[in-house]
Amino acid sequence: MSKQEITLTPVSGGACCTPISDAALDPAAAAEGAVVFKALADPIRLRLLSMITSAAGEICVCDLTPQFEVSGPTISHHLKVLREAGLVDCERRGTWVYYWSVPQRLEWIATLIATPAPLS
Image (cartoon, rainbow, N blue to C red; front, side, top):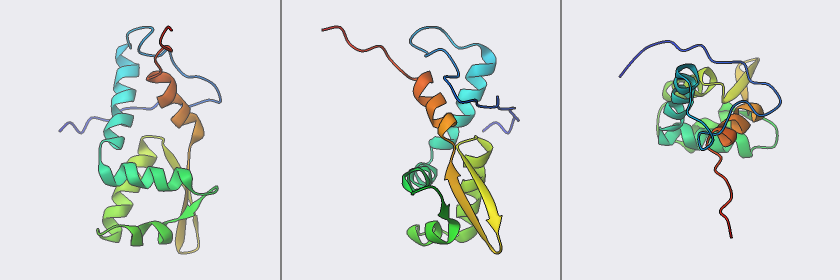
């Protein structure tokens, strides 16, 4: 597996990109998309993102860790991958870290893979 570093484009409030059904991705957008989809390609990370996104606002790592049969450091690693992909953000409060999803990044994914509605 490649360990190359990709600099992610900051996400803004609106649509970020042209859907892949409308135009081919340029190399930078393809590399950025690959980082995001690689982060989502792990069942634990996908489940973590689901739990964080479905929480009302934010969720403590102390509520996430017991839901998995892996160690705390493993959960921390997976959360770091999600953060580096721009899918979640966090804040330390005392000994705990609280996570929330980044809605603009989720919209970016939705826009990227959007397909036109089928014609009736």
